[in-house]
Each structure stands twice: as C-alpha cells, then as structure tokens.
Length: 139
Image 1 (cartoon, one colour):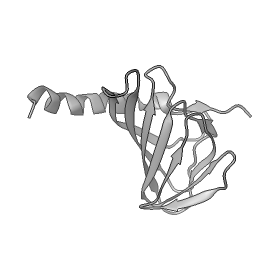
Image 2 (cartoon, helix red, strand yellow):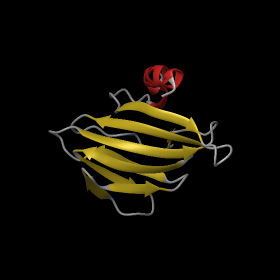
Image 3 (tube, one colour):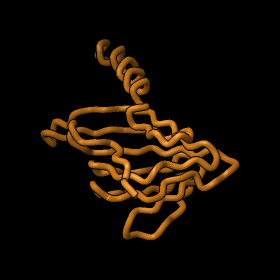
Image 4 (cartoon, one colour):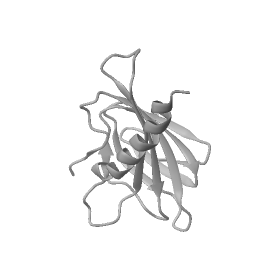
C-alpha cells in the first residue's frame, strides 16, 4: 500500500469536508450537511473528474432548487428522499433506491420525505474541474 496515499486520503477528505460549506446555500435556514468523500481527476476521461458526496438531511430538511453542471447519480443510504427534476414526476426514493440526473437538469425538489427521521444520500458526479457542483436556480 502506498503510505503517502494512505496518509493523504484522510487529509484530503478532511480538507474537502471543511470546505463543504462552499456547496451550502445562503437561505437563512440551516442547509443539509454536504461532505465530499472523494474528488479525483479521471485518467480515462481527460478534463473530467469524479466526485463522491454524502448529503445528510435532518428530519423535514430540504435543498434549495438547483442544477448541477455535471452528471449526477444519487443513492439513498438511509431514510427516504423526495426528488423532483424538471420535466419528470416527483418520486420518493427509499433506502437502497437510486436515480440519475443528466448534466444541467433542474432539480426543483430534493428533500427528506420524513419530518421525524433523518435521511442520507450518496451522490456520484462527473464534471469538469471548473464546473459548479450546485448552481442555485433563480425564481
């Protein structure tokens, strides 16, 4: 095992976790907790990177309406999450279920479906290093 890689990974994760508020939004209400788990350039897709993010929702919590510059795939780790992408129907996904969002899709609703239990998502994204992870939609 590469010792530098073994030691650097937690440091990178910590650094990116501390930087996670860059993905947060200024709405006055507490936003979901976003933790970057991995961020790597793709050797087989020049100019693109893979990003793995964990999103924690408190009971009743939701994200602001947004889009992602990159392609996103989401997997519900726990609880249930309601997602509504523009042009599609609103769906509530339970733990073990997943969905795909094409780059540029407008995510009108992303929220914890429960007002009593937390929910957690694992999101995998592919995007360019200069692209935004989350772009708030203007009303």
